[in-house]
Amino acid sequence: MASFISASALSTLAGIVSLTFGFFCSIAVARLLGAEGSGAIAFSLWLATTTTLVANFGVPHILNRYMAGFDRPGNPGGGLTRVLLPNFAIPVSLTTIGFAGYGVWLHASGSDYTYSPDTWLMIAVLFLVFSIASVAEAAARGLNRFDETGRLVFIGCLFQLPLVLLGGYFFGVPGALAGYVARYIPQALKIFKYVRHRPADDVEVEPRMRAHGRNEWFSDGMGLLIWGRIEILFLGLYFSTTDIGYYAAGLTLASLVVQLPAQMVAALTPHMGKHHDNNDLTRINTTYQRVLRWITLLMIPVCFGGAAVIPELLPLLFGSEFTPAIPMAIIIVASALATALSLVPSLTVSAREHSSFFLYSTPILAVVSVAALAMVVPNWGGIGAAWTRAAIHSIWLGWLLWYCWHRLSVRFDLANMAKLLLSGAACALAAHLTLVAYSGFVGLCLAILAGAAAYLVSLRLFRCIPIGDVLALDGNLPDIIPQRLRDVSIAVLLLLVSRKDDAKP
Image 1 (cartoon, one colour):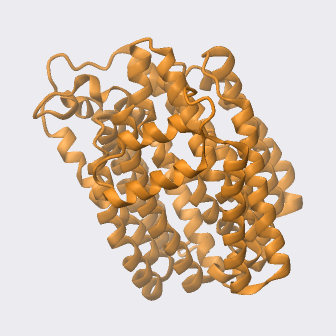
Image 2: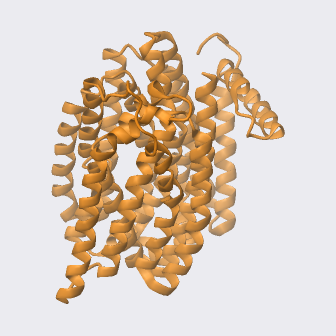
Image 3: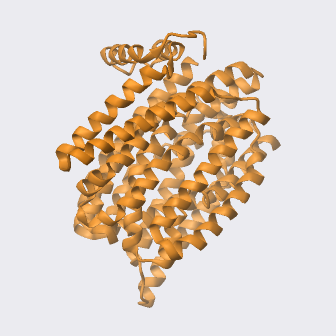
């Protein structure tokens, strides 16, 4: 548990840095390029990142799950990354050539286009760099090297924001995309560290490893149709780039909810995989319950309270031009809780080598998602896409929780989860009522304070936090966190804990 908490803390710190810089980049793009430019950037990022999931053929999943088993001094992972190199190098190269070639063809033909040839060339570069970076990051995470990934995230972010500002100001959408490319270059360069050594004699991609990667890759492909911002594609088909920009504003705020827990649970697969290999179901259950509880505890006020203050927050951040985005942003941010929570059972299923579950569940949900969007978006636009997204993600969370409970014997405390939801509702209600009484920036600040106060009081009143969780956290935080900050954080948590049933996980 100690190594998991330490790795999660380091990954979370890196996630906070990445989210902060990414958030400011989104605001900069909105202010510099308007709703239309924001829509073009959102489409470009969606295309590059989602295509990466298809082109890597599940290699990052294999590295994340099995790297540690081959590790040895002087040869990280025993050379497993090098063994898998052809599996992703060939499709990534061909896809990069395809994106770049399309941009060159547009330039040579002089045809009308929604996105300029320069934009397509930058999409090609972004795809290439992001693909390589994702493989290198998976290798590092598989070896529990979260200090390395955190450092590289910070370096990349230092380049990202100024280049987005300068590139967007002087060169528009293609220039802003150069800043996003810079974000992933430091991590991409680390690929040489993991492929330069010859593989050890005993390094072999076993059938179970290939099956794991193939199943995860297939589920990722289906996942693109469920939680991969597929709504952007439908909005692009039936509406303008400006409408994509409005929808992207809500997704930007929701990303603060989804990406942070993704960093927090980055170490969950190798950690639970180790306990699965040891057939230690007790520790798996303990970890599952604690992680699910803390993700819920941290994300509920952001989702529910954040949705309550969006009418004042969104125009303040992105400008009055984005006022039409408010209704869909409220739905997207509130429902992002389901997206965030689904990470925990999903990674648990993967760690326990039940990824075959994804082979039938994700295609079913993908068909439902695409069919629903095809019927809803043409008539109701962004607001319909937001409601569809909320429904699909909630269904997926329920299915995952049911599977873990009934098929893997991995359960959680229903009563505790209900109390956390009530606390989140109290937070949202307090923030909303404050905004009704006070508007503008002052009202926004008061609403945030009122929501936070209501949430903290509710946590203590409903006894949502077992003391065992806080003691486990206190004993396993990494040394990189300053001691004074650790002491203050633990002291605050101890004021909120339930001292009843201390032995509960």
